[in-house]
Image 1 (cartoon, one colour):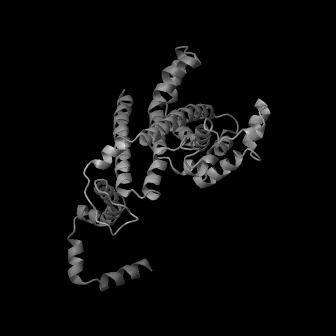
Image 2 (cartoon, helix red, strand yellow):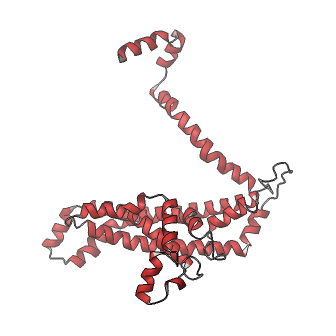
Image 3 (cartoon, rainbow, N blue to C red):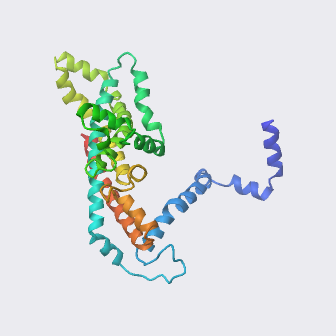
Length: 315
């Protein structure tokens, strides 16, 4: 059947076109196949980036498309770097990134180390631990918002049972001091399994003969951990930190679902500020400049971190 189809296609192909196809080199044929993908990536990723760079130097507003667009130079960038609210949002973002990465790395590596012991039922518990990571952020946000409710939420009743504080007085999402930590808890619960998987891959990649040699030298378990396990798993840990750091720096959906940046502006991270400037105040040029600053900051920090990661891998 396939042969008949191929023969019919070959007979229907014009002789001139057939000669051209036969004359294409392997390299040319490869470019012929990947060109549509490259063009699609350019249209989806590269063009919006350059368009945002152009808009960042203008006073363009998306809700006023008929107005004359004026070039304002670096005015948007100067205004952003001198805006106190922007710096407060960046500090909130840094606080969120630091604590989520710290908790996810510590808990994720600990879980990976325990699962690597291959105790009875470890496969079942691995699957259970991975469940939060499989859920949609929208589902997780609404689920935890229900748990945080002071009237009917299980989280408030659990804290009340331990501390003795009335559940109605435990407003995780409405309390200025507790709201940032409520987001940290949810993100840690959801993405610790991701860090665990990467750390587990690092632990499973350590050859067994190294531990056997250490046992021959009568090295204790504690010594094996600090001299073998941790150094050899460190590149994987750093890779997990890199991935989660980039994702948490641009975190939007979880914060928007849980607090929307409130109470007040306590949990207003950079992405929430960007959304408000772009789609509430309609300062498109200003928000484009802010987006470019965030992109340069993430790209620069990630580049420095990758160089440090490469040095660790080469040791």
